[in-house]
Length: 416
Image (cartoon, rainbow, N blue to C red; front, side, top):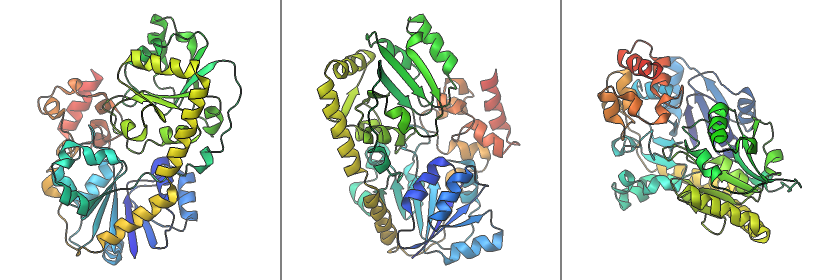
C-alpha cells in the first residue's frame, strides 16, 4: 500500500504526529507544500523512513498522485492546503482527510466538506458528537469516520519523578494567547485562596502584561511565574502539583498533547467541562471538570488539602493515558482505516463548489457561528481566534492572498 500525505508544512505538531506514526509497514511519502518550518522535526520524520517531497512541479505532482493508493490530507484550514485543494488536478484518487481541529467552533466542520472525502479521521472522539456530525447519521459515520490521535509518544512522560519544592504549584503548559487560554483565566486563579500557591505558566509569554495587570487588580500578581518556552517540559512538570487547563470555550484544539503529557506524568488535571477536555479527563477519577471559578478553586483546594487523594488521582491519570492513548494501538488504527479506504474506487474530486471563488470566500468556508460578523463587516464582534496572525484567520489568508480586498478590509478593522 502506497500512502501519500499532503501537508502545508512541517511544524512541531504535525512533525510529532508523523514521527509517532512511523512507517507502519507500508510505503509512505509526505508532500510538503512549503519549506519545513521546523528542521529538527523534519529530520526526525526522515529518520523514520518517510520520503519527503518538497514543492513538486506539476508533472511530478500528477505522477505522485496517480501512483499513490491513498492520499491523506492533513487538514487545519491552512491557506496553502485550501489553495491546493481548489487547484486539485483531475486525477482519480482515494482520499482520506486527517482532521487536526476539533470542529468545535472554528474551523467549523461542515458535512458537505467532510463528504468530499472517502474517509475522515478525527484526532478526538469529541468531533464525532458534534451536532453537525451526528446529523450525518450513524451508518454514514460508521462507514466513513474514525479517530486517530496526534500520535505523540507518552511513554517518556511516565518516567517523570516528582521533585520536592516549597510552594504548591499549579501549572499550565501551552499557548498563552487568549484564543487558547481562557480570557478570564485570572478570575479562576483568584478563586483559589491558598497562601503558598504558585501559578506556573510555561510557553511564550505573549499575554504576560495582560495577565499580570489583571492579577495585580486582584492582589495576586506575585503568585504568577512565567517560565517561557522550555526545551524539555518534563523538568517543569516534575515540580507541579496540579495541571490547570482552563481554556477558551472557542478553542479549536483536538488531541491536546500538553494535557495528555501532563496527565501521563502523573499529574491530576483541572479543566473546564467543555470540548475535548471533557473527553480526556474522567471527572473525579483522573482529574476534575468544573463549570465556574468557584468550582475551580474548590477542586484545587481539595487536591491541596488531601495529598493522598491527589496522588491516587495522578496515578489513575497516568494509567488512563497509557491505556487510551497507546501509540501502538493508535498506529494500528491509522493503518486499519487506510485499509478500509482501499475498499473505495478511485475518483476525481472537485472542491471548488465548497470553497467558493475568492480567497475571502475560502476563509469563510469554515466559518459558521460568526459568519454574519464578516458578511456585515462587524469583524471585531467575532471570536478572539480571528485576530490571530495564523491559525486560518483573515490575516493568515491575507498573507497568502494579499490582493483580496475583503480580507484586507477585515484585517484593517482589527488594526483600528
